[in-house]
Image (cartoon, rainbow, N blue to C red; front, side, top):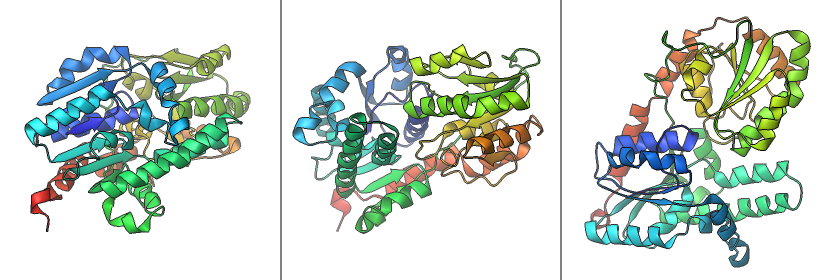
Length: 397
């Protein structure tokens, strides 16, 4: 049983990249019964693609606005808001039916909130991929917001952490996206440490590789400073707004012709408003991110809020690009290479961007680092090994 909060295709954002590659790898070793939600109408076109990897699927379309309203009942019941968001009867019924009909004994849960569909089965071995510590992400959000939103986010952080601990106790194994993320979670409950492990993200290095077939998307004589990512995700929104407000003014005075490109789907109104600056371009969704990465002069990842591993950094490294990133964006990557500079304050970002503009357009060391440390094949094999090494109930002493 593979349960995931969002259909694992197309692999065009962080969680879907990880869940797709795990689905693809697990399908080579197991009969996969996939239950997932679809929260974007555009993803309906990929149902047939997902079915190719599964023995059976149950994909349920949800309305995010309506589900957000329903999740508010958590305020009345004392639960996390995230759990009732996905608490949908039809998914419960399908899971129950599939488990009973096919005598499923193992479940891979992607995101803690999906564990609610299988935790009542006492003989079920649950491997839960939390990916990031979501509760800590809400804590960071709370610190950035004013009351009353800060109170709601702070409450969600505490309630979700309680739920994460409950799921950990009921699971055979809990996974995170990096060793650093796993070690942080262990500090919350030392007695549960033996259950906590990590499986790294990876990069499709055959896909993210420079190609002469890509056309340059930038204007002649522009110096392209580029950020990539889903632009309806608040951490990304916060990052680009900060960069435009705090870094770009000084960069303008240092070098003419620099343009900040924000490349990613569904830009929020706050991001679209940045287009008012002559040297900021908001592209919206693009068919292929790779030309924007390949022809960028510098890739920036000025995230102020982050957990886990940033795929945007790994993908840019795989294409050999010079990168300037915040400490938060580099958590779990630990790349000690000359092609990546870590900067925090605005003046540090300005200096690092200007330095990286002097580097080569293709830095082999960045790609070499990714090839050596972030392979989807190795990560997939580790996940399969974890699942296989968990004994079935009748095998336990």
